Figure (cartoon, helix red, strand yellow):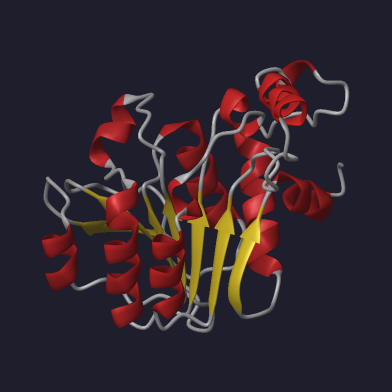
Length: 225
């Protein structure tokens, strides 16, 4: 185990994307240890993997009094509440209302960088899907935490600008929003593996403050757009 490499915390890693991100973090060689948030005792088959066990149900009160592991980087997979295998039953999901409490607990333990990872389905990636982070209150609360860097990864192609004024422009915008999957200019949605590769690319970046990475920015990092 490396004494010089930082450690990382991974929470909410359910589904195919969650498993892919856990494996990617372990294989990256960037961390001495990766701590995974679970709801029951686990036996690790990887020397770099450890478990942070908290009881069910996970709550803001539990997180407020929990002793989070001392890590540098925190990866919170929010909206990853889709269970695909027996393995997922041992992993805490992190609903939107608990992401802030979990981030605060890790910051209290000395974490410096926070990555909010939003694994969306292909349809969600190509639609006007609105994730929880879009709320100004949530964004401000995350920005207030003592992190050197906060990055939000939301792989959607949905336009953030409001439609033009007038009945016909609004109607055209609403109509096209329903059929983005069939538009020639649509970008192929991320597979779990490619999305996790983009997550690691974002973690390689420097900088500080609050950053939001949409699909265009993530594809640019992968040089595939």
